[in-house]
Image (cartoon, rainbow, N blue to C red; front, top):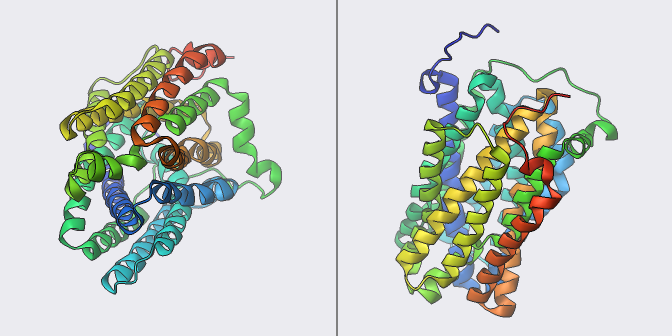
Length: 409
C-alpha cells in the first residue's frame, strides 16, 4: 500500500468515519443500558451488593471466553464478529424492554441479561478495537485512537444523562433505544472497508490460543501498562456506587444519576480532544503514571464531595485522567503488537483492564456493604495512589518508556 508523505485528514477517510459512527452509537447504547440496569436494580433491591453483582456477571464471561475471543479476532473477519456481538446485545436489551413493559422485570433477569451482554462484549471488544489498525495507516494510528476515543466519549457524555431522562419518562423506552443503536452499529460495521486484511489463519491449538499471554509476558512495557491499569481501576473504580450517591447522598433521583454518569465522559471528552490536537509523543510512561495518580485523586474528591456539582467535577477529573491512561495503553499495545497477534493480545488486555471495571464495581459494592459508601470510595482512591507509588519500582520498563515505538533490539 502506497502512503503519501502527507496522510489524509482523518475525517476525510470514509472508512474511519463509519468506524466513528459505530463507536458513537455503541457507546451511547452501552452507557444508556448501564444507567437503566443500575437504576432498576437498585430500585428493585436497594442493595449495594446487588449493584456489585451486575459487574460480576459481566466479568465472568470475559474471563471464561478470553482465549476464544482473541483467537476469533485474529482468525476471522473482525467486522463480522463485532457486528454479530452487537446484534446479540440488541436482543438482550429487547428482552429487558419486554419484561419492563409487562411488569415482569426481576433482579434475576437483570443479572442474566448482564451476563449475556458481558459475553457479547467479550467478543466485540477485541475485534472492534483491533480493527482500527486495519482501517488507517500506522503513521496516524495514535491520532486515530485519540479521535476514536473522542467520538466515543462525546457519545458517553450525553448517553448517561439521556438514560436518566428516559428512565424517568418511560423505563421501557430506554431498552428499545439501546436495541436500535446496537442494530444500526452492526449494519454499519459490517460494511466498513479495510485497507489491510488480517494475516493468514494460524492453526487452532493451545500454543496459538495462548500466544497473546506469551507475547505480553515477553514485552515488559505492554505488560506494565496492562498491570498498572488493572490495579488502578480494580481498586479505585467507584462508578458502580453512583446510584447510591445520586439517590441516597445527594437525593437527586435518576436524572442526577445520569448527570453523575455523564461527568466522567465530559472530562474524558476534553482529554481526548486535547490528545487529538496535541498527541503525546514523549515521556509516555511517566505521563501514564501521572494520569493514574490523578485518577485516584479524583476518586478521593468524589468521596469528599459535599454537593452533586462537586461530585460531578470530581468525576470529570476521573474521566479525563482515565482517558489519558487508556490512549497511552492502547497506543503502546497496538504499535508493539504485530497485526496477526493483535486480537489475542487485545483479548488478554481486555480481560485484565476492561473487565477490571466490572470486577471493580463488584469490589466497590462489596466494600460499601461492609464499610459504607463513603469509606469504600476513600479506600479505593488511596489504594490507587499506593499502587502508583509501588509500581514506579516494579514496572520500571513502563515508567522509563519515552515513546510509543518499540525499543530497538
